[in-house]
Amino acid sequence: MHGNFKVITLCGSTRFKNEYIEVQKRLTLDGNIVRSVGLFGHSGDSEVWENMDEGTLTKTKEMLDDMHKRKIDMAD
Image: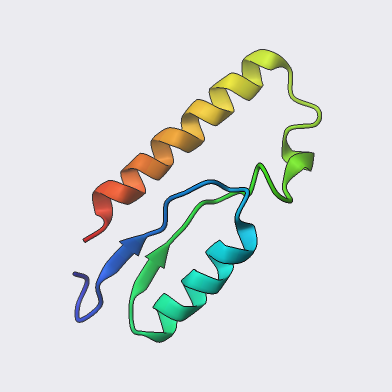
């Protein structure tokens, strides 16, 4: 908990961008601090990957995965 607020991290496939946004809004309005993904790589943020070489792409995906795991660590 952070103050009176439960901290929740959303997890799942980024193919479900609309569902993420819907759930994030509902949980926020219910009085929770919500952490989510930083990019929707499978549904809307494809421009992020377009000009990356394979090595940079791999390192970036690994970084994003690690960052999300740390968000899970911070959740209640």
